[in-house]
Structure formats: structure tokens, C-alpha cells
Image 1 (cartoon, rainbow, N blue to C red):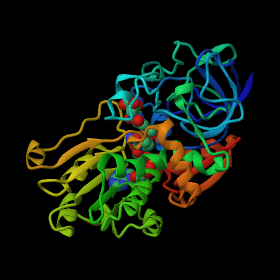
Image 2 (cartoon, rainbow, N blue to C red; image 1 turned 60 degrees about the vertical axis):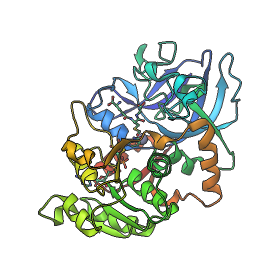
Image 3 (cartoon, protein in one colour; image 1 turned 60 degrees about the horizontal axis):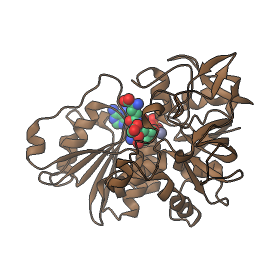
Image 4 (cartoon, rainbow, N blue to C red; image 1 turned 90 degrees about the vertical axis):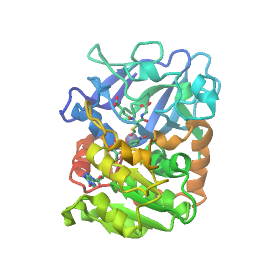
Length: 369
Ligand code: NAD
Ligand code: AHE
Ligand code: ZN
């Protein structure tokens, strides 16, 4: 079938809106009509050419919502008409990771996913007879996409897809990192570095956890207003200080915060985020994605003296079993998605969504088909 799609033909190039060919779903696969998709900084990261797993030409996009159009052989857990959120972190329930009870990472389709292919090692997308690669197992920048059955969460049909698509990545990642990775408790102090979709969602998680102080750090002061309205208590622009920002935070918080979250993807900020944690117990969670060749560093003494460095993917959330509940949390008013949607636009304007993100003017642009 034909599908309108925004194709990344090469690193650093604007996406091109073209009509691609999409093959029917094969065994264990599902054809989904995407109705809405957010644009996450990770899409921009991969488009930039910095992603070691970036492959071109590809259909990017991983923060979508849609409706099942058709299922392939053997698919039993979803049916046409189901409302779904595609998952870049699958949940097969059977692999070593899924059975471990220790992680939300799943190995079922991850290897082929990282190569831009379906689990059988082929692609369902083409343009003018040439293959187009998949992305993160989701490729939500195409009106019709094919994903593995294990990469779909079936959600409440009453949920507006133009909002809950954001649970496909950004909001789930930030809220989940606070609850599942850090396990922030009432009274804890928290520092959030980077106030985009991920950082603001981490603020929301910290408010849910009843953190006593939520320090919001960004080099773009325009981000502070929304952070304040979401519950942050202190606002720090590193550009206003002429010494390492970790020193400022340690001083402000009687020795450092209980938890910090890096929501930018900058390895220097990752160091600051670790070193602003309290001696003896402070934990820093890396959420931001850094480019090829980048490495983190600190004095080992920082860890010897009790600080802990952790990372979080998709907020530690198991998509098939936990995401439907988070959608219901949105419907029940326990998760707020509305403030994240700063812009909406049709697929044809998707490059503007990237510009808005790079210019620091948007939190999330939701694309509709
Ligand atoms: P975004 O661009 O919307 O927000 C980033 C924010 O960081 C901006 O407000 C920007 O002003 C701020 N910033 C940039 N440099 C800074 C600096 N040196 N000091 C302080 N603030 C700075 O991005 P986003 O969509 O919120 O994504 C944030 C990061 O999280 C990206 O690296 C993205 O790839 C990553 N991410 C990771 C996961 C995961 O599962 N681990 C999921 C989603 C996104
Ligand atoms: N491909 C990159 C890594 C990208 C990365 O870390 N992705 C995050 C999700 S970002 C969503 O916006 C993640 O969940 N990673 C775990 C995984 O299995 O991909 C690289 O460096 O190669
Ligand atoms: Zn993302």
C-alpha cells in the first residue's frame, strides 16, 4: 500500500514528505495507521548523524499513537481497530531480560531493530523500489507503519491519541525515571538538568513522589515558567554563574541533592549532575542520549564516597504491561499531558517541528496525519 511519510534520506538533511510503499505485515507483525506522533529530541539526534545506530534512508519517529489496520500470521494479542502505542522498548515477556524482573529492556527484537529492520531481517518500506529502513522498531513518521506484535501496547480507546502519543516516549521516560529508576520518596530533594519534554516530565514525577525541593536547571530561561507551573521550586541558569554549577547546587542544598536527572545528552552536564548529589547516598540518573564517541568522566572518589551513577531507558517502564495503566492515569487526571503539547501541525510541516525544538521554542510538537 501507499503511505505518506517523512523520510530521512541522509544525516543533516531536512525530512522529505513522499509517498512510500508499505508491504503487508508478516508473521508476528502488525500494520498500524498512525494518527499522531510527537517529535522527540532523539529523532533530531539520529537525524543529525550522531547516532551510532543511525541508518539512512529511514522513517524516523518513535512517540506515536494509532489504530491497528491489519495483523500478520499468528498475531493474537491485538486486532484491527485496537488503539495502540508503538514501543521502542518491546516486551515479549519471555526473554532473559523480561523474565529477570530487574529491567524493562527486552531482547526479543532489539538486535534487528538497531539495524533498521523487522525481526526477520528485512524492511517493509521502500521508495521508488529502493529500501527504506525502520527506526527504533516504530517509524511513526509514516501514516502506515509495520511493527512487531511485542512492540505494541493496547490502550483505552477513550484516550485521545493526540495526547497519549506522548506516553510513547517523553512523558513516560521522565515520570518513569523518577519512580522506577530513582525511586524518589516523599521529602527527597531533586535536581533536573534540561527542561524539555523529558525534564518537565521528571518534574511531574517528582511532584507525584512529593519531593520537598525540585531544582530546575536550564541554559534557556524561557523554560522556567512552565517548570514552575509544573511544580519546580528553584530555577538555575548555569550561564548566571561563573563556577561549576554543581558547586552552586551543593551550596544551595546543604551538601547536595538526593537525586539528579540529566535530561539533555551532554556529557559535561552528566558530570555536574553526578557531582551535585549528596555525599554518601545521592544518585544521578542519566536519561539524555549522547553522540557517538562521547564518554562520561568524574573522579572515582565521587563514587567511592557514595554517589551512584545510573541510567534509564523509557523510564524503566514495561510497555505492554504498564503503559495501558499510564494512559488510564491520564484519563483519571493523575498524569497531565496537556502542557507538553506546545504545537500541533500536519505531517507536511514536520521540519518546522525540528526547527522549533532546536530554537528552544517548543516542548512537544504533535504531528497529525
Ligand atoms: P529538548 O531539546 O526538548 O530539551 C533539552 C533541554 O536541555 C532544553 O530545554 C535545552 O535548553 C536544555 N539544555 C541544553 N543544553 C543545556 C546545558 N548545557 N545546560 C542546561 N540545559 C541545557 O529534549 P528532550 O526531548 O526533552 O530530550 C532530552 C534528552 O533525553 C535527549 O538527549 C533525548 O535524546 C533523551 N531521551 C532519552 C530517553 C531515554 O529513554 N533514555 C527518552 C527520551 C529522550
Ligand atoms: N542508538 C543510540 C542509543 C539511543 C538510546 O539510548 N535510546 C534510548 C531511548 S531514547 C528515546 O527517545 C534507549 O531506550 N536506549 C535503550 C535501547 O535499547 O536502545 C546509540 O548510542 O547507539
Ligand atoms: Zn524519545
